[in-house]
Image (cartoon, rainbow, N blue to C red):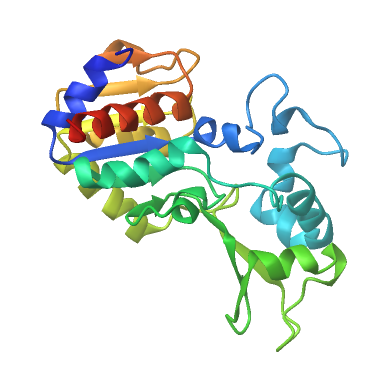
Length: 248
């Protein structure tokens, strides 16, 4: 088996945490951010995507903000792939928590139960005045220039952490607790260069750190295992191995 070492680690662990980034969603056709042709290479609006996705830009240019969001991040054809579904399966084999930097909601769409979203989710939106909630379908169906609360006319904001905003303290505390109690940490599809999310790795106290990423990360020297393959391929094969074992 290609990933026998990872299979053996999962098989012998009781509290597993998967910490994922943009690379766990690219197989679902979600654009990544920092690759050569990623989202951050675009200059479509005369300003950088980082600026568009900032707290200040949202409040000063909400129409352009939502135009960008709907065009590049809130695509209706995005579905969970085999890697997401494999993690659901692994909940019965020690997978305790998924900590994700992604805002696409794909883990929950696949059926994962304990998902901590460090940066929030585009599945949820709320009025900043009356706090009424709206889902992603409502946003998709509403023209970018008309995304105002039907109840009070207030500005509707996605439930995500924009640049210039702080992470949710409760989510941070839950993430630190999960990491500190884990006996296996699997980091997948992230360059581990985005602060403060990348700093969470230091709370892991276990001895087995597995990195699944196609390129090098600053934590490679700390890893017990490094796999240069896609998230979906790795975890679908792990699932197949468990299924083969249970059928014997």
